[in-house]
Image (tube, rainbow, N blue to C red; front, side, top):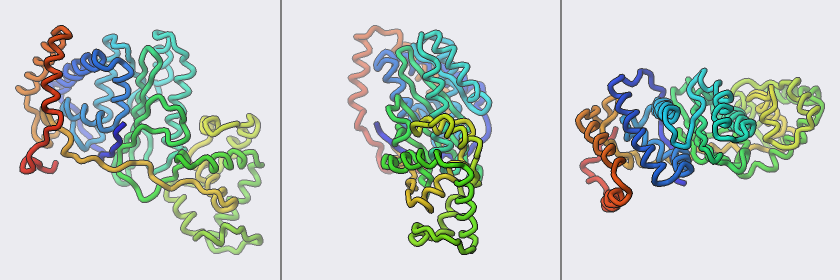
Length: 383
């Protein structure tokens, strides 16, 4: 699985009707060919690859560096999959539509004879991971769940950071673990630090955190108040050893940069009553939000000397010149949409879909010739 990142500024605007109609026709043809070549699971694997997903987005005419590349592309795919039977369906969407995911998943699972409660749980847990367990200042506002008739799944969701006006896209695929380096890829700008409690080395942190939530919430509240007071310059009656190792003020400031630090005592009391067994269950607990996890992590770090990871899991950005623009970009970047070329491409693919398998093999042989082709350096123009 290739991993990569893309800078995704928050863009407004909309796709004009003449372009949207072409995008749907082209995306439908691509889906037909993909399912025929790779099967439904192969399609989901590709949607979970941030580089492949971005390439598909560029192919249909969306921009290379737009937050809308996620919402438009997934929206078009969902509409196509709802109208025709490819063996794949999609639930969710942007904003209010994302909250419709559970109901839509139940309908899909009934059609495919799958256990809907399992997939609704996965949807909730994945959303919780990217809002609570991994905190980078991005607010989740888009969540699309793709599922095939065999039960394979992929999720593409996106968060926004209004302060720096950037978006970040999270890709998931048939995760075996949801709480230890679970993503297939994260597209976004790599930050100096991020509260990452699902790092591959987070086992000790998660184990100690589960022990911590068994404590009396009132005791945790007192410890949190002590830490806050010491950070302001007050001298504590009891000096914890970790205070000697860390710059306490800088540590508290780092946590506060991600938002408020508050304990939801009702949620913690519920965790004790339910006797939470693992980190998945804790994240799914009603009332356990980002501020409570920040507070618990701060207590763990400064009182118990157990630290979360501060590594931002975004990987290195790919070379933008690896992305080809077959028909142009919606916002005229890197060049305006070429309608004649777009229509010719659709016509060619329509004829290809109608051909028998033997004739398609000839086209595949031609694609092998161009697989390693690289554009001349003089043709590389920054977008």
